[in-house]
Length: 395
Image (cartoon, rainbow, N blue to C red):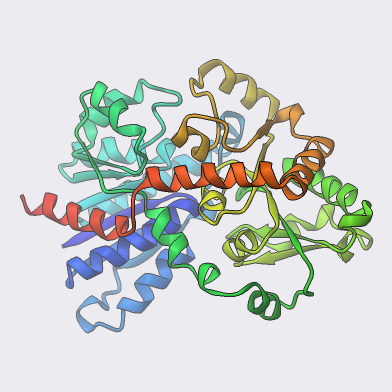
């Protein structure tokens, strides 16, 4: 069968790559054409050694770095480019004629494609539900009208979608597999230091987000935080590692790096999971990374800053108590969240010191992490979802 998959950002690329592995395992003759990133392309590359799959019309269509934006103001500024991509995608689907269009999160773009694909007669699956439980609940109508089957990944979504009368399939969360099978989980701290060319000194992880706008707002705070921590005698020997986001480059981070702070601040690309895994603590921009950090059992604080207008609008429409997936899963503040003005260097220094120096506080957070992992279920989610999708198509 032919599968047309659309992932619009880094987290979608991760889940899309694992989904593709499951599809190829269940459907040896699968042909996959996709919007995604390097991870999805690497899976596709492996299967191109199989002769019957080596077709020129399969593979990567567009890289997500060409269109990944977040926030109301940011979306407006890129509206022309996004609309151009939507038009291109519609034409591409019509020409390729897949058996199913699989949409992964990224609702601003994917709802437009869902409506088009449904009206054009294509089967539509939505994997990793749009966060209608947080805001824009009116999209429920579109899910019911344009999506043939919804595949959800969080346990708290089950009662919500039950109450809305939407049929779904839940097979656990694919991030559990991505973490447990990662090199970071198998590699020792010492081996990571050697491979990454780092000194054998403790690490504090800093994740500024994957989008340019997030990096621009978080980097000033993170570098100031690192400078204040480094100035403390007990932390002067620490390394502060910035996890360079996929599809970004050093030029995105260089404006905030100086000759002075570059002695203790380093940017590493392609090492996000290893940086998190081997850090004493982490400052994490809210998103999938904060849930990864919980699964890696690294103490964390979430920091998030966005455009003031975007934040003002979000406060009017967002209904959830927390912005981090881990906190939402256990419905309590398993780790602190500093948002907008509360996200400043002094607050981050105080919290990170507390997580490193206060053993009781650290252990309490790790206990909460255990509850988060337990709620997500066991391993094998990606393969189970792929199998369920193929079974749905066979009906």
